[in-house]
Image (cartoon, rainbow, N blue to C red; front, side):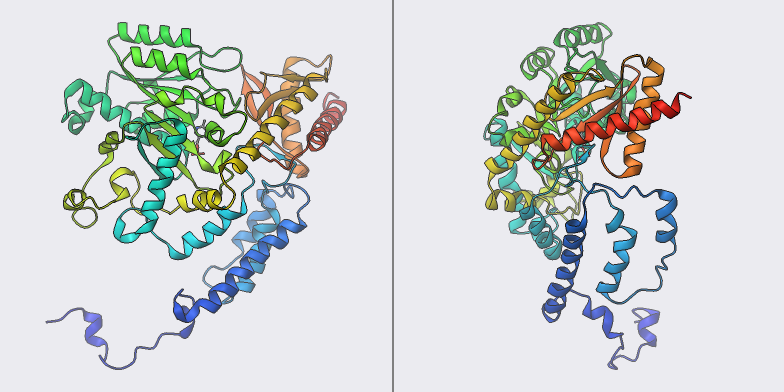
Length: 509
Ligand SMILES: *Cc1c(COP(=O)(O)O)cnc(C)c1O
């Protein structure tokens, strides 16, 4: 029997010659010395770059960087980690955006804690995959402990469960998928979810205007369409207005629709605003809806020593999203979706003979793939594990508390300056504001703030974000760095006004 035409041509028994180099790059008992030496080189390259960095960004542009990246011949390897790292310095490390810098105050990117980086080295080298027990062993148990730990901090009971995900977007998608299938089951019985398309039309999701765009995206991905999301008005603090929610639910009921999910946001991406969880939970329950709390941003409050009360009421949620890679100071990616009733995860359980046969479930072999949208999955939980085992939750919470304190102090600085205008009082660790010296009109103020943001980024001296509030362009600071001082912030505000004034002098001509 011919196994393969290629095997036929091989002289079986003769040594097959491989160049020695590829073998030397495999991590195995023979190559541990090389492994440690190369890892150390990589770590040293990062350490040297970070030590030399004195601003968040060099201000490079795609036009400047693209030719250098494109000029590299990927079919001509350098055959040496040191040389590859040296090259990487010029195409990436030197010009990267550094979130640890105290003048980085733009998006929800955090400085990362070192125990989590040690964990990254461990988890990628062992390379466990958290789909099945036979690809992970203890890693699965560690992830389950962290799911339980998080659920307990949420105030969920013993029946809670959850799974780590790649980020808040995926956590929200999974939560809404559970909510969708739960709703279809309510309407059409246990076999309903097998015949979904016919059952989707009446389903609606209620989320505030300030909710994350992944809610609308999830609705589209789940076959409901963007229009299935009913936008609920906010109060002037950009928190969901419970009266508006009550009205929206009632109007929807009159139209014969079905409230599949109410989404409360605990920490909106722009304003850090936290929807009134208690009243929203009550309305959701009365309507017979699933309550999802998107705490991708506010989840870090679970470890806070002084601001945990901001999450009061979260225990009534059916599902919660927590992004550890935002307010737990973990490197990307690390997120989780938690459910109060663990049995709801059955809505993502499928069995495959080659992976997680139903017999394994009967033998109670812990396979996380039964609960996840992903198959092969990183052991991201290890980062939080080593962080908790090294520093503890209080230390993590104190880092967030420092960032929140700084936010309130910075807002006072802005309030005291008549040239600045706050869009809303800060509630977590973001500030939305604009630079508007006396006598500058609305349209010009839009251009001015757009220009300031771009000019700062191009200078690399500070990085701030921008957003649109009621049709007007605003600047945004997201503060997650406990090392940043009020003096750093005063420095950023000084850069903003100087940049703005220079533009006004030249730009109005
Ligand atoms: C960041 C964020 C998300 C999305 O999380 P990713 O980890 O970026 O996918 C969802 N919701 C809110 C409120 C967020 O701030």
